[in-house]
Amino acid sequence: MRAHTEILFCYALKDIMARVDVCPENLTTITKASKRLGCDKDEYGNDQYICLPTVDMSSLVEFCYKGIMGYNKKGNCLQASKGNLTLIPCVGFLSGCPKTSFKSSDFYKYSACQSLDLEHHCYKTDPKCPQNTDKMSETQAGFIGVIAVIPIVVLFVLFVLAYIYLRKRRKQRKTKKIAGDYIETTNEDDQEMHNFPSEEHPDRPFLNKGAEKELTDTTQMLHTKVGKEWPRKSSKQIGT
Image (cartoon, rainbow, N blue to C red; front, side):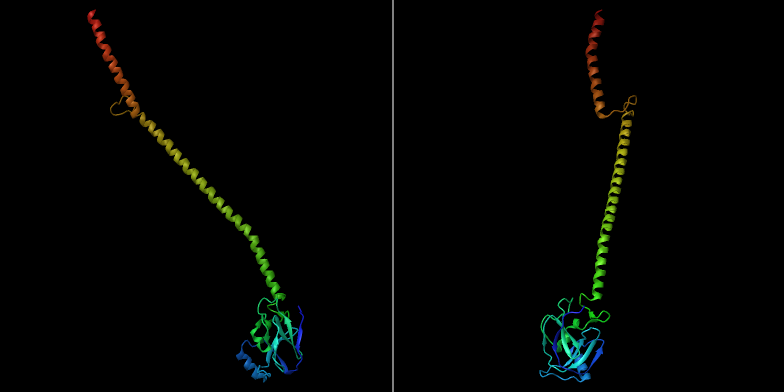
């Protein structure tokens, strides 16, 4: 987990380095902490109070730095080590790494450089920190679980759709069968009605209009023929 560090200054620290749980996050709290420790200002008027992780990342310490609060290279975090300020690269951090050069007195603007995982002695936003690798493993496991569930869900949906389709087809077939039975029954009833005697001719079956017309035409033709032949037969009988 250790990375290359660069020694910036070799000025002695004033008095002691006190361990703290958290570092100040704004100028107001920095001013109060600076007064509490009795820190001075450098020759450019910058407050010499500073709060940083130790190089072994086992704790945060606050102290009054007896040196110029100069500019530092971007892509690095500050650390404290026995009277020295050092830089450690943070370009790969998930967030919070300085993207421009910064003064040492502006340390509070980069909270990622003060956020430590004290159990694993690493920065919380460092992807190599075990807590992040564990989270990534959990995320990957969750992703794999989702992928495994998708086929099951798809199969279930297909099964439901197939069931609905088959049920609909069965219902349609049943409806067609009922309709067919009804039509067949109706045809049988019509046939019976055709064979039922009419009121005008109770001695003969009931006929439809076409059959009645054909019967009427045949009857008229027979009457006409008989009418023509009857006088001939009558004259022959008289002559004899």
